[in-house]
Length: 108
Image 1 (cartoon, rainbow, N blue to C red):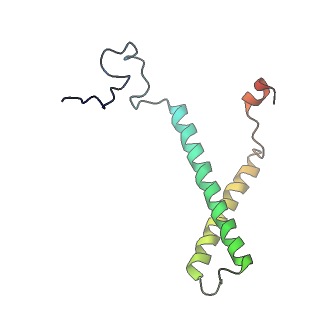
Image 2: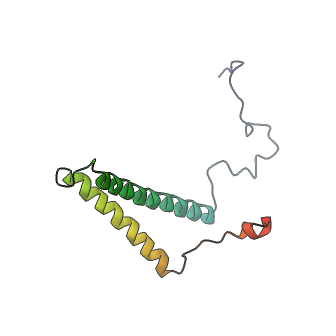
Image 3: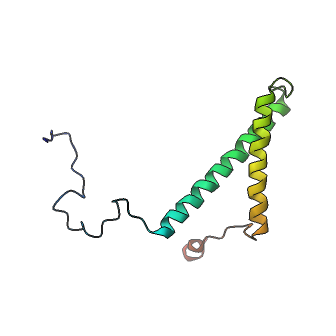
């Protein structure tokens, strides 16, 4: 395979001094994977709550008629229920506020 002058050669190509301990190869620690899944779940739940609030805003403004938009109303209710369930679980586990440990170190 030939490279043109515009192709990039990755840093992990042959001859790199860190080939053995390179973590970009797809092998991740279980803790990294669990943290990434937790972050994705939090993002999805936040999107559910945001979309439900957005629908409620359009209902209040009068743009959406609840009687004519049955499917959208049901979808907004389901999204709101998902967000409420996640909020309830968070309150039940006493994780109401997240205090990041690096905030103390940086002096915030």
